[in-house]
Image 1 (cartoon, rainbow, N blue to C red):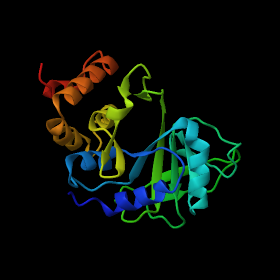
Image 2: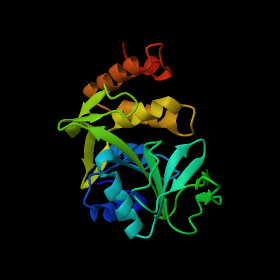
Image 3: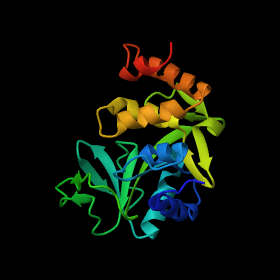
Image 4: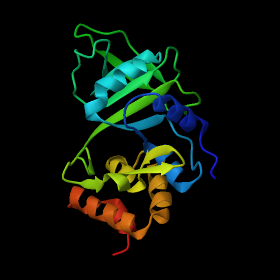
Length: 222
């Protein structure tokens, strides 16, 4: 049995108390798939579903977290009333007071703020980012192109009792920013450990998303 990240176990314990579906995402999900911690991670990413957004916001607030919705371009809006949201992006950031990973500047006239994230590595469970997605009864829908789908039982896997986003889905999300630190390593390690069906699904999805080609396709078998 792998020695799981303390942060992942703490996040799972916290989220289990909420009445909503979730799965660990990002590099932490890659590690859960690999069975070991492959590198340091900047934060905890959690995959959730759009229909449960309000429920998640209220749950995190009840656990002492400030909740901000991301607006793009470094702009954020603090959610204090779930009836007053902007819904410009699919992610929200939740963090506790004095979290060293973030700095939020005072709001301006439109009640929005500038947000700064420090890539120093997360050491305690004082920050969680939720990324919202859609699903049907049977399939997980890729947020950037809902025509790209994966069966739910293949999209959400489990390491013991911890749900995580499958490596092929994680890599598809990471494919939009492959120069980001750690993403190329995530691809090389995860792709080599995936089974043939997972590899083929990722190849097909990349070809669909990038008809002009993508760097990672050159690593894949013809």
